[in-house]
Length: 239
Length: 98
Image 1 (cartoon, each protein chain N blue to C red):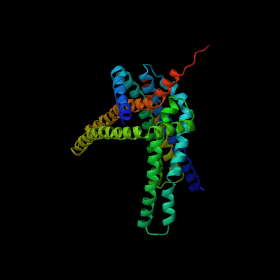
Image 2: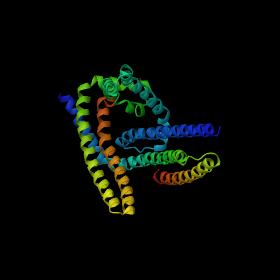
Image 3: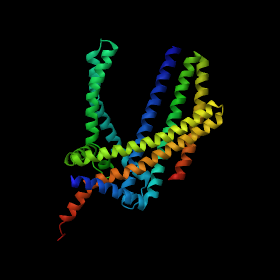
Image 4: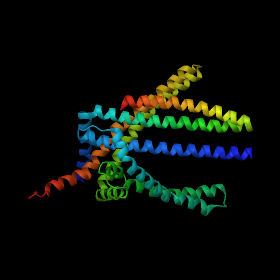
């Protein structure tokens, strides 16, 4: 009975921890969506009330994340199929089957990510519904497929360049910390660890700072800006 | 193709104009959001690692009954104190940046 009580207690404890982790991750993700409002407002010379935007974004972004997770799970189903088809075979066969079907999943997932890449901007800036924002992004990408593809290639190269530079800087710090730890300076290593976290934090912000506006202005150049111009052209007089 | 390159070039030049015009404010905004995000992830990591340590502690010790209860309550109190400290510092940081 004691063991059972301890076991259920532990399970409840783990469940609570998982629930807490998911809830916190959701809060952090919704907070992350506010960066799109920030870039939109700063582009228009306005300030952003972070808490207010966080509250406004909470329900739509939560719904959006839930839907994207469901779609992603469906896309990843081939990996499970690969496992099922090869179950009972050797470990290598199972891995081979999973890799083969996994490749299909990766291709479909990349295609999905490519098509919905503007959906978050449509959701939090244009204030469209969850499904509507996915459809809108799909239509936008489909209409400008060459431009988006070319831009994505340039964007990935820039992001990779920034990533390489930041990883070199981070590596230098790690080596420094390791040297201090091996040299017996635990306090120095701990301080180096704190400094390392600070550097990683600043580099993350710097990456956002460089990449976000470029991405935002491409989206605006493709979609809403054009629509606004069209609206201006066809604006009817009130009387 | 010309239109395509123009759109991409415009995206870069508009971004450049924005960095020049309101780069500092934009960076501060990003800093605030990232700080809050890191605070959340930090708290969660501390709590989860503590929870895992509590569970592992119980398993390693192999303790049962009163010993386990004592171990658990002691650890929970310790974690609660740590969490309280982190939450308090996070709140102070949030008030400072918002």
